[in-house]
Image 1 (tube, rainbow, N blue to C red):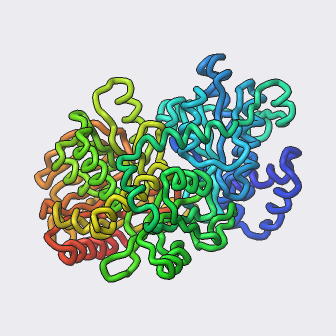
Image 2 (cartoon, rainbow, N blue to C red; image 1 turned 90 degrees about the horizontal axis):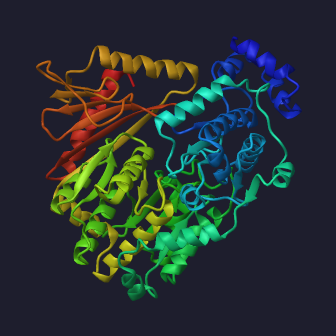
Length: 577
């Protein structure tokens, strides 16, 4: 069926509500808009689905949320009656339509005799991941689009370990979704009927208390907070998201007496009115907080995205300038702090391990090596870190210390299997207090890391390619890079080509060796002849973007940054970006 036929079917369907039909009638004169909304189904990948809110198969709405939930119901029922009784935990963030989508999910699951646990108010990703494990659920659903702009929402599916579904389980869900007609095959009941049947349970706030209790066990130097509690000031902003309640409670538990909250951003508002995008990677979102910091002599600002799985920080340098740190820099600070603190307390395990993604700073590896700790690389996406954690729990082969990725996601502790902005905020705040007791700021601590391990510089650049044309352009670029790979960049030879899709590593002599230990992924990595510099090309799995990740290290920031800029400029020219 072509996009025009699908469009007409939506207009004629008795299932589609009048508001959705009105939205579709309003675009009747725009063939391009109709094509864009209906040329494909919104893709359901291993991380679920994410898209612009609106009517159409290539948008997220109650109809494909119901269809996806029907697929989740089949997956759970395929695990047996006990899995259906164990149920599915459903959480949602502050985005527009998040609660509606969560309730629609519950209606479909319970119609299929799968028990649903529904949070009564917004909750963060880590709280949902924790809750799945705590309640013994067979799966979980989180309605969120993380740090995407206000136009987006999404649907993430988790397994019984609290991690995002592994590929084999995701395939079961996808196959089920594809077998169901979006209108004719989807069944649902009312929430009242679900409650009467004993299939819908509203989650109590006891889970929230248990979550905070568990997270707080990851504190390393609680005495440092007590030492400076009366004089140390920090600012927190939830960017209109779910972090407000758990993080303010955690900072209070820790004993901080001077926590300033950005009131303008401490509202549950899916339109995110004070920021262009609720992304802690962007300094723009911290403008109000930085103004507050200057007025109140504050050393550190912490911000979390709407579903509270990502954390960004702003620190004051020696000249009083407020600087946003990258995810790599914050990760390096946490790795050094955790290993240093554990070593000081004699609690550094011999089989300890740090997990990072392939696009995350190699500075973490340098730090880990100095402490005799192993570092593991996984593909981009926190679910791969979660899979390793579950493996370690089953085998006992390693003691997990921290997992993180350059995109501002961190997890310390095994209470969850996804990024946790609550535990990360707790440790960042404690780390700032710890260094304060040593007469240092976080910025000075970071500079000490560079002096000790080398000046590592990374940069991530995204190129947005929206719509059908953009998807085709991205596909052509990746094909071209495989068929005609570049041989030089910024005056340096490319000495190693790693293709994570074909699982091969090729050198300049044409020797090809297999890439072991990682699953297939549409990613290309290029190592340069200086043996320090690399760049990685990867299409985003959640947004219409292609990303280039660059990294190097040198004896000074200036040298490293100059190298990065040369490589980036050459890549943009060669790739037509």
